[in-house]
Length: 187
Image 1 (cartoon, rainbow, N blue to C red):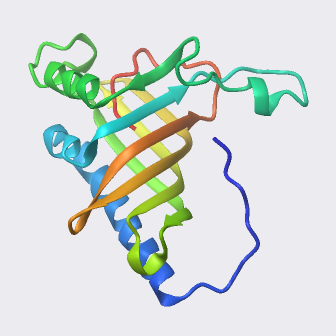
Image 2 (cartoon, rainbow, N blue to C red; image 1 turned 45 degrees about the vertical axis):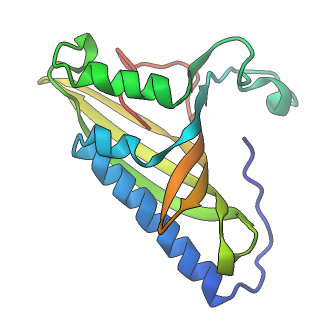
Image 3 (cartoon, helix red, strand yellow; image 1 turned 120 degrees about the horizontal axis):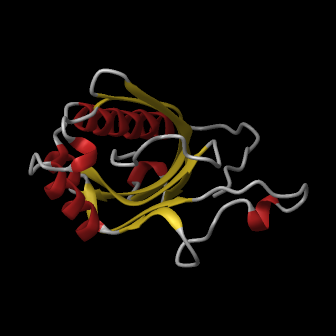
């Protein structure tokens, strides 16, 4: 995942309207996760979703692009899931007997720096959008376990009717050693 920084260019009102629509979608998604409405959250995911979080490595200078992040389908990653596995994770959490989520975590998902990276075919008739953003997630479990996750995401969204569905999510944590006791929340 690379976020390219493009020079400013003239953007019409359709671009900014679409940016706000996508931001509202991502804020709504964050609310669903924080309110533990996991089944409703699953409804925001396309049937063909790819949900991927590579493991990050410390590498020598000049090798970041090729070696810093594990690659999807090669080796190991924190997540390399589809809708079925995400649904099974939700089902397990909602049984009430999930080791890492009993009691359920309290989370606060903050999403910022939302940028449209690609719009197809165009902002006036957007059918698919590539979105970059930053996140900060605070997780609290039981009385004293608190973890903060900071990173960035690259999402691909597809318009379905009057709403959007997430078809791809790539999550990059800004750390290479995971200090959390578990990784049971959704990003």
